[in-house]
Amino acid sequence: MSKNILIKPILTEKMTKMGEKLNKFGFVVDKSANKIQIREAVEEMYGVTVESVNTYVMPGKNRRRFTRSGILTGRTKVVKKAIVSLAEGETIDFFEDV
Image (cartoon, rainbow, N blue to C red; front, side, top):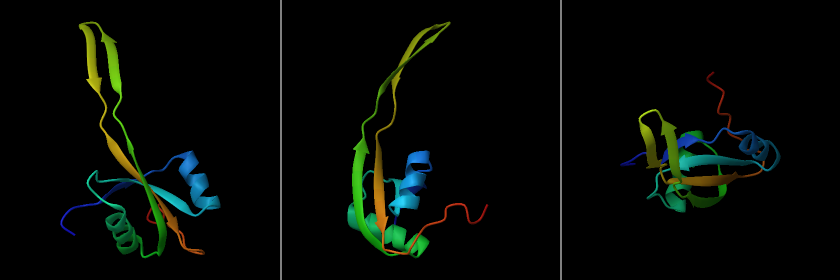
């Protein structure tokens, strides 16, 4: 692979419950990656069989901070996320090396 498709896993309470109950896992992925590339990257990195991939783009939000020197305005980054459904009986353990 010429570039890194999977940036990091999403480790929130909601995604942990989805992993336990529905066998679905979330990843932050490269904005230009498509579903086929995401499927291949997950299968190669974790050695599992992927059934389906759902993606969505989280738009950036406007943020404003009030500081002593005045009001600072900015914008958060645009992030693409993927929810990966695994085959029956397979799982990903993100904490196996800890």
